[in-house]
Image 1 (cartoon, rainbow over the protein chains, first blue to last red):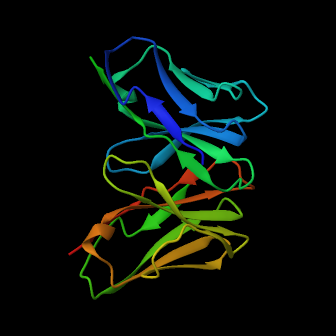
Image 2: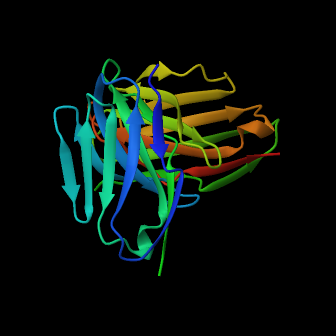
Length: 113
Length: 111
């Protein structure tokens, strides 16, 4: 059974720092991996989608990498801003049931001025 | 347009009530999803519709009844819920197992 873990559970950093969020999964047979952000009480906003054949994806200040063999993905946020404060979730798409996402436990990020 | 809409935003219901949640997307996506999210927890998949047919039911109690009237619309009918069913209910859509787009959610409180 696929299990997805995110470390750290919470992170508080000053504005301007570059930071890395980690996502680990136990079964390397994945279809894709998606990163989301969620503001309190709101829905999920898709940030980046990495297909299983890809190694990384970039969007603005965000860069996500994928290492299937080691069961890891990282989300790199450059020059963090207070508006980046949110919970970040990674989710793994199952290879044999591509409609099913298994979510990680989330990292709650606070960026202070 | 990558928008998924959900109504209502908030819902308070008693344990004997019948209510429905509605979700709509106009992106031409062929798959639509219902998730349940409790506070400080990740979303949990409930149901998936693919091409308007129920393809995944994650052993959800029968007091939750999904319906997909057409390719753009997804409903979740609620009946005889319990207080522990109080949660944020999220709808999502995607094309062919690809990127999932989520709506803003319905905050449900069961008294």
